[in-house]
Length: 279
Ligand SMILES: [Zn+2]
Ligand SMILES: [Zn+2]
Image (tube, rainbow, N blue to C red; front, side, top):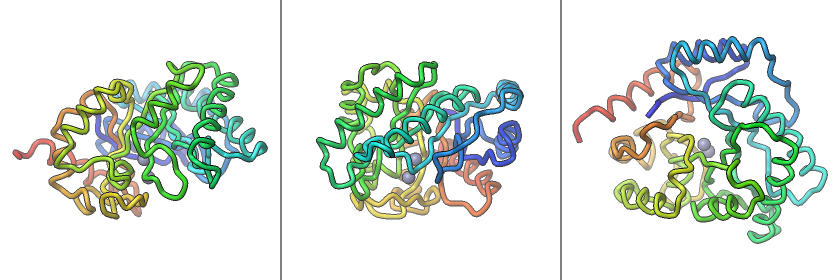
């Protein structure tokens, strides 16, 4: 696996690549734009090329993430149009920056019911992939099931993919905190969970992992990340996930709470130590 963390691109993409490298990352995630806004800037081609050259030099893999406010299931036609335009730009930026894909959370049905939320998500994705025709993959992320969030279970993510017009352009990002909080797996049953995920064809479509501990207990449906080993997944749980081999070949990025990006350095080192320590 390629361990890394979320990195700010507020000082430009090439600087983000430098910062990731300095922290000991082998992969990193960045927001395509301000995570709480729909409007953003298109990637500067010159900065993108410089950043990509640095990534190649350092052997870094990048994962893009769309703004949190994007709701693929929004019933509001105006908001849906804005979301599609916004996500089109996210995919374009992710492509320009050479990311393996652009992560977007599963939709929220906001009271319209699950069936509606699913159909609406399929429709939004169809329109998005008509508007954006480039090679960047849309990576759907599993959720904790907070509020009206869809996509706690892998089956539901697979269903969305099977229902869209261009399924080959959809792959997945797995968040360890979200799935735990959603009550989808227990660390002590991790191997069986991964075996099931392989069986339904989910695991082979996995392009990125978010490695987070959970501030709330199993099944709480609360999306609050904790630092590795400090939450309800715990040190033994995180170690079991890391050592299972399930993440082989994948970018595995931390989105744990930090006051300063520099704190990720020791936390990535800690993850590596869990991987190497004898069970
Ligand atoms: Zn995540
Ligand atoms: Zn989260």
